[in-house]
Image (cartoon, rainbow, N blue to C red; front, side, top):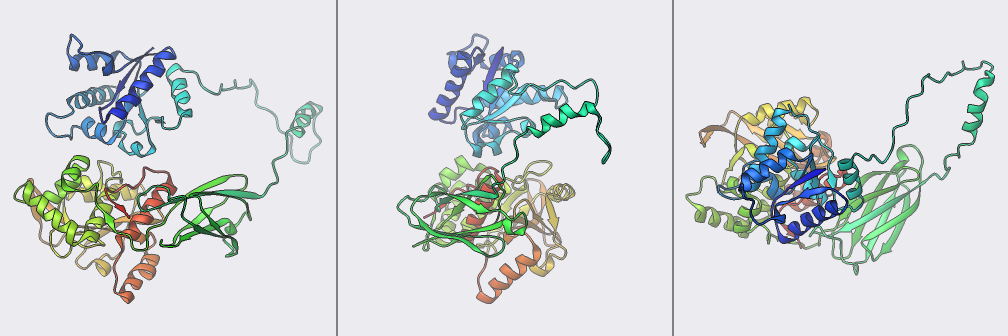
Length: 494
């Protein structure tokens, strides 16, 4: 059994994890190979890695943001050549097998990295080795040792008696056996684990006094109690087997804004888990991970969009720095939108892949921005709409002026991206592409009526616009509730 691990040298900690994985597999009897096991192969690294991929029964692909970028050949020239080469060889093998894959297994060391699994491997079973039990699942996969053995099919189909007819004597032993099956528990309650985070996306400090309120679907308050721990387990919540099981959970603390999550569907005999975020009442944007040199390294696609049209990198940095200092809410809105758009899978790429630049004027605001997009994105969205990923807005000009078409992503209950196009406005030539004007935004609510009554109308009365802090909280909680990779824009709120 030969196994090869394809990965990138993201950090010393990451390299140590890969080394420990290969050592564990070798200790369990699998000939697992990684590049760190030798100084320099005589045939050279390109041929060595190609042969390892071709000759191994399995290839473990360790997905990270860096790995995906290099696998797709999108890193800067001369950087990460090994991963770029291995990505090419893997893609070629899959091409030759017409996409049938029983060899390449995606693995991650954290749930967040699942988003960075290369497109060709997203249909394969993945293993999150940040969860210790998943190592055994991976080992069973590699060694063809299933945890459950499929029982053989009986030679004859079991006969069933007509309803109301006298039973044949041959069925009595079967019925006797069925009567011996233990009865299902009659406990008609459920449990709820509530985890409280702060604006840094970390568990809130244990010294914070949290007031937790739980209300069932009948609007009856079930709990109203203070806690001083960020992980709160509530047992014995009644189950009604109707709309009463749609629970509302509210959390508040002194010095923080209240957070809520609606609804939480409770089920008998289970433990549901939700994550809530409390922002400081006077919280500020902290762009420590979004300084221009850092952004170019960690989010090169964000930086490229923001740099478009600048005379050089210094001019782009100056423009960006002024935005950070003078309009932090507008920058936070852009980072929210860019992060959310990069997590939407179109038939080919993501919406962010089609955006070429932003329009630097007073329309760059805390609730939206206007930019230039490759018009091919429209056909991509239409196809995704047919697959149930987007919903068209009936008359976008009502809310969006000169808009011609608009679609909302409908994956979550709250904080979905809306992509609006102004195809009759002047266009812009960028990189040889005649780009159309695009208006990305994020609504608090998915339903059009709720968006109008609870957001548009409220903003009109109070003379406010969508708050990027609220979007930050809603989208992060929606991602956590849906079990998808975390919403992690390159800033925090402190």
